[in-house]
Length: 288
Image (cartoon, rainbow, N blue to C red):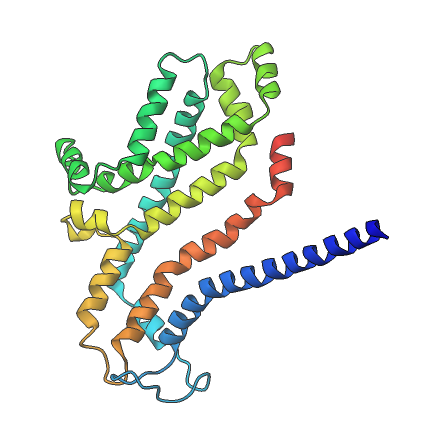
């Protein structure tokens, strides 16, 4: 009798725990989604200049603000620059992070502990914007896209993540490759990287999101208007049009449309990258 009571008590507590988990996750998801829904609603519903709705949605939804943005010819070149810097930052970032992480897991490397300590110190204590600007200036990278790409590619957090993932790989596979005569370079290219596709996909997404959303680097390092990216130029265009838009449009609606347009590529990329985070993909990578 006492045993059955214990099982019933455990079952009730587990059900309560599941209910709590469901409610907590629902609250968390809603807190994330609702701001995006609000911003999107601001961008597609007609507002007067003073903020009042002309009609109740969804009867007066319009995409005229998005048409206004996509027909700006001045944004075509900045869009290409954003795509270029995003691709190059992702490629260079993955190369630097994966090679650095692979070097740091070599337990026989001289000075390994010193390098790890330097990385941790640099990760915890950020030098700030002024020292970074001085380094870019001394390297004569001002007013070039390299001033944006190189700092974004050197991300200590991503190096640490990649290092931890490499250390979680089965050591027996790496030892077997060494016994078979694989050099460290061959082991890295033919064994470690194919087994690390989920980590590469995740870190690649981090690099792409950071590069696409970058704004402050273009303010600090780029003076040439022909080298400004999509985020900078879109902000500049919206500031110029904020007080010159049609009387029925609220400037906040135009700003909301700009936020949606800026975030849309990263949202699409995140949905595409979801397939790399599944257990099936991870197991397939290990089997390869």
